[in-house]
Amino acid sequence: MPVPRRLRVTGESGPFGGEPRVGVDPALPSEGYRLTIGPDGATITGGGEAGVFWGRQTLRQLLGPDAYRRAPIRPAPRALPYLTIEDEPRFAWRGLLLDVARHFMPKDGVLRYLDLMAAHKLNVLHLHLTDDQGWRVEIRRRPRLTEVGAWRRRTRLGWGDPPMWDERPHGGFYTQDDLREIVAYAAARHITVVPEIDVPGHSQAAIAAYPELGNADVVDTASLEVRTGWGVSPNVLAPTDQVLRFYEDVLTEVLEIFPSRFVHIGGDECPKDQWRASATAQARIRAEGLRDEAELQSWFIRHFDRWLAERGRRLIGWDEILEGGLADGAAVASWQGYAGGITAARAGHDVVMCPMQEVYLDHRQADGDDEPVPFGWVRTLRDVYRFEPVPPELAGTEHAARIIGTQANMWTEVADSQQRVDYQVFPRLAAFAEVAWSHLPAPDERDVEDFRRRMDAAHYARLDAMGVAYRPPSGPLPWQRRPGIPGRPFAGPPRERNRP
Image (cartoon, rainbow, N blue to C red):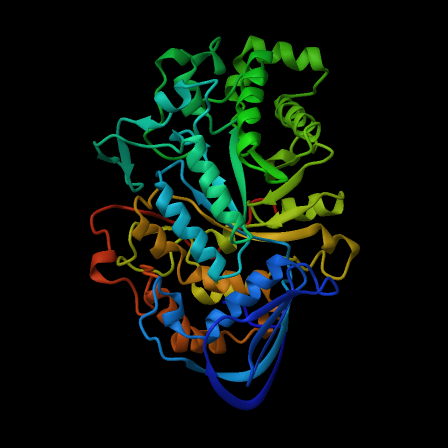
């Protein structure tokens, strides 16, 4: 629920009905807009069509919670204040990651989240489509990726030891037409869908479908199944020409579906043990003149950086792609903390800030046993509202412009339904959206109490109208709890992995 940058109120008001007048003024920023409400109605002028759309979202906010319902329930015009709002976003990339690999979200759920993103002026949906626990995108050249890789025989419940299991098979995938529908639905809301195909780690589902992708000279890859538990799998892709050609086939079809400039290729949490033991991997290191396995991972990433660039696209990956040397055109999604983003920005690379210590929405929202399957550090609504995407090391320097945006990440190891995702995402996504759009003061100067008052006065009612199963300010409702399913809470304040 971003707040406008400039607001002038006359003190008068009057009834509003019908549609606003709209127009485009190229002198405004492309996503910027001017909204004027007066006795003759409302006028929205945008710097482009996106600006007009975001202006409509602001008008929708002013119309009250009923404007968020799918059909009108009160035909009478609503009285609106006469005012002028001029606004534009702080960041070009205002994103939400949905992890549909760990727990599959059916197509209608993704479309619903695009509506929720649009209402919060977020404009990038990062779809995490592949991982050890499932492959969710149809690839016609490689049908076993969904025939085998989209299904696991059971699922770990929570993080307890000994583990608990849901013995039901779990899975699902999107057909290419499903994804084209998602992309078109997003585009109508001025949202870009960025696909993620994870390499060379987080690839056990692909290896289970095609064992030749793994390090078969080290492990019996033919015996591997789609991973049923959480954590980091040791089973990673082999650095062979066959694997490169396989993923070129995959990405060729991905590019036909997704027109986004950026394509995310993961690059995170890739254990090197199998490569150290693999004669094939060691031969590749020698043949390419690489120093070690870290540079072998970089070799993998650089290949796809070049491959995507030749097709007019840009690679983005998690901050581990810095290890062994960063590909020339790559952008970095800095998740381990701020450090990777700082390093990348200073080296001239674009950065999307999404540090897990601040904006990982799978992390718990409070202490105590009532939180459903509590994972990670406590990240409250206040914490998210005080998140600052530009670290102080870069603020005021030429490198700050390399922070092209920010993103909140919703991982779904322990969020197995739409209701659980809603609970983790909201209301914190409202705080994140304001940070991503608005030109707020420094974190210590932000008026958290005013934000809470605005949530209480209007925004919870908007979420209710949209059917969002958010976490109430007073704590989880009885049916939102998950008693008996252990979590994995982290003790103490958030700690960054690689702070310089």
